[in-house]
Length: 112
Length: 114
Image 1 (spheres, rainbow over the protein chains, first blue to last red):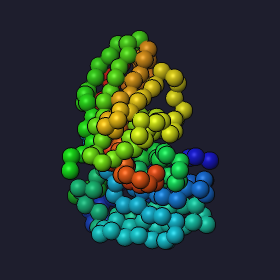
Image 2 (image 1 turned 180 degrees about the vertical axis):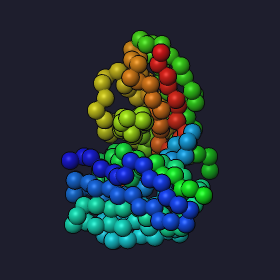
Image 3 (image 1 turned 30 degrees about the vertical axis):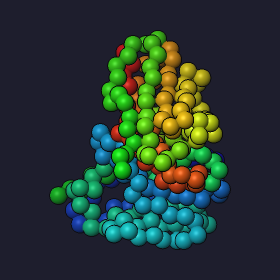
């Protein structure tokens, strides 16, 4: 019940294309859903986050879509660029839980 | 504002030894969490501290321990090292007050056990 399932494991996208990464969760108590981006040799960094009272959040080329009834959320990267090549993690947490659960990660490669 | 600082960046230890990793959070952040990152298991939660108190602990053996000091700096210790402990250990701090806020990660300590 504490798991966050992420797919795909890896993704290759052409420059200018749309990258889509999906996540699903089981625990309905989760109320904060962040996405983190990690480059080699660096720690993960917050990219964008959403709370379940909204169905979509957009920041620049990055959009989170959230489906509360299906317990799923996804990250869309529009106009993908080679600089977006990184590992992306979805995550979930709940107030008072004092921990964040991470998906297994998606390695994105954007071809120039 | 300085980010989360982890020391050392790299460590090589022998099986059976013990190791201590250090983390300095962002100034003003009182919550510090530790994660183990491996290629096969992803990011696994170790423990979280707030004001020197452990508030949550992941599913790791007792060989893994941690503590937090009054200045919010944190250390984690792994005793009787095993080959499987080889991993990137990440520390993250989060902002004051809320228990449900973004994590700010350091660049980790890469531990290799031989």
